[in-house]
Image 1 (cartoon, rainbow, N blue to C red):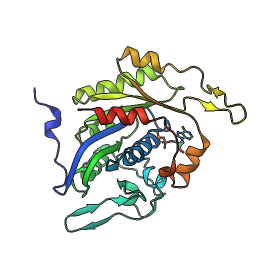
Image 2 (cartoon, rainbow, N blue to C red):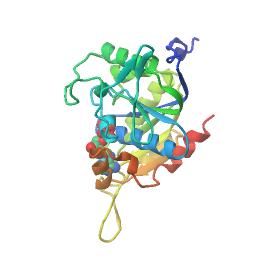
Image 3 (cartoon, rainbow, N blue to C red):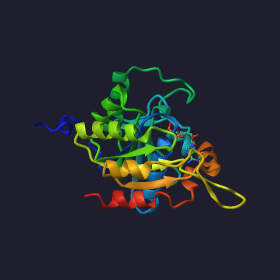
Image 4 (cartoon, protein in one colour):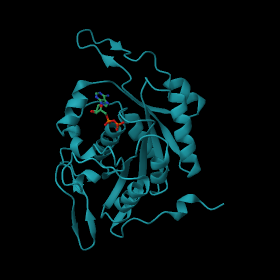
Length: 258
Ligand code: ADP
């Protein structure tokens, strides 16, 4: 059987990308972009070169998180990524739009074509870990994006208020169709810490993440609390200043992947 990944385009000849990790979720708003951003920052802090390909074309939020409002530049060889303050390369539809509040009302094939170009025509240079902020869900658009970029693994982001088992099952199947390993689950908005007494509040009730992870034989790579400092940092373009060790396990898991 032909490996579906063998049909993928190669990256730009001036790009050497060692590992590509897709970040997926069942729907929008669970924190997929936040996790993508945090993972890129963390890997960068751990001494690796990291980059973000924002494939969430209709809801691109990565540039804002990093405080990047410039337009993408190009030269005769291709398109250049924008670089964050700490040197993380980014490419997003928002860097191509006249105004970053313009809506993107493209159909699936156009979206997939754009993402393919982000992969094959952007001069990424040398990158140890590229994180791809995937379109949310498991429908036509995310599937086409799965088929457009040679992912080495995916991470599934969930939140306690979702039907986690169904989402994980669908995302896992989609990845398996393309022979892509699922590295594990990250639960976002797991709890909030009371500022007065320090107690952890389960805002959305008890989490089922451990049960679900065990059923699918996947590890839970991290749990991120609801923290107004996180959303404030994203709103102000200062995600690179985040403090927290919630994703250290996820970073270690990615580093140890063969
Ligand atoms: P998605 O990519 O899944 O659509 P985002 O990462 O864009 O979701 O997150 C949606 C919004 O929720 C953003 O404004 C983000 O800053 C906020 N948010 C996400 N996770 C958290 C969290 N753990 N604590 C506080 N705010 C969060």
